[in-house]
Image 1 (cartoon, chains in turn yellow, blue):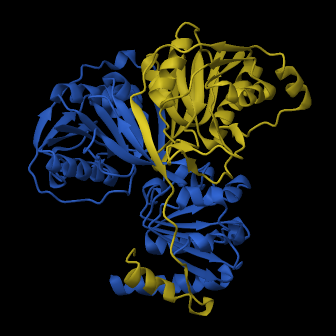
Image 2 (cartoon, rainbow over the protein chains, first blue to last red; image 1 turned 90 degrees about the vertical axis):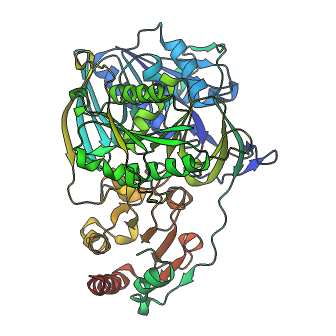
Image 3 (tube, rainbow over the protein chains, first blue to last red; image 1 turned 120 degrees about the vertical axis):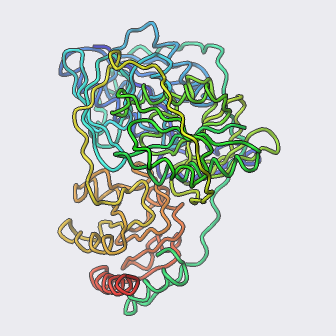
Length: 245
Length: 325
């Protein structure tokens, strides 16, 4: 069983988001970077599956050398090897082109990623890879078991849950409930230093979209405080003043 | 300009998010002398199609073959790409629901189209084709240019109003020629909670944090939500300690929502939580700590004990609703 897990590096969730260069670039100053939390769940579940029934887990990232600490962390958590496509990730389409180009000759049984990155929130990777590799894709997976070349899955659907079966190979995106993240132990951290991390040069793909500028949301006006003794007044305010009920 | 809209149905009923998408497309069509083709996939009875015309569809492409009885990204995206090519459309509009997110990228890849998800603005075409989207789970906006001839936009539910247009749409039965024999996926069971408001599409949301002290007190949250017709939600710690299901967790690593009203009870308002809810039109924070960061992000605040305050609000909501009825 060969599993590929696509990871991206994102700002830590406590980051105050700001921009530089006339609001065209994310301000990375003082920002701690982490493996995208959903990607980490995908990785952990991939390890659980391969530990149970044998196999290997490869992590792949499209990024410049600055993402290597996150890739090493993925190796410390337990991935067998890693690939970094040496390119600035320009947009989701560009990244998917790079990953699918790498994956097309590698015969992965399962390709997993997070349901979205918590920085750009595109949520497109599983679908783009599925189409580019001509594989089924299932988003927001909350459970997956693999047996006899078949994945038994649960996924979130609007307003509920669906159980389904998909013949491997397939692409899936991890939703929160999939598993609990693992903290790498000292042995894992030591082993990660010598695990193979292959750097691959990108293919000439183009980005279809370009972010031209960023903006922070406007600050909220003052909060109108209601005396707790008159808490019932809230309903009237929401109806007459805010006009939302 | 011809515009394709995915008119998603759930058990034969068009969803509100789909009607928002049709309204959105109709506004763009009106500004660009274009027309709107709503694409219905799966079985919908003919009398429902008038609703798509009501919100501005000029034409309906109806893909009702058996292969579409269950939803899969592989098949639905093929129908949508088929419709786009057939119509010679330049723009595809999809609501960014779970199903929308599944088919939008597959459709874009088939069409070689640039795709933007989480869109919260109408396109600006003064100089190229630009839309605004949320990024960093609501901590910022990004303006994005799309440079392909066909464009796919996945628009955020609850971001655009329903606008009646009163057109009579013509219906065309279509066939994308997809065989179910080749399908690798099989649906085993679909479970939807009946009678509950879906959190991702809810206009009103009542949410609880650790200040609720335990799952046994959630009847207060549920009661207020029921009276208002709201969905229930919770903070990350609450879902982490299993007081509530993960599917209710809103915030940066949970669901990002954009309701008209978000009532946060016993939630301090950590930056990760605010990221997921700050796009709400009106925010109410109820917390006994006057220093809780949520008061800086809220429109209305009550500094008080949830267990004293909530029963009063529930009573007021009850009498308000009975007066309305």
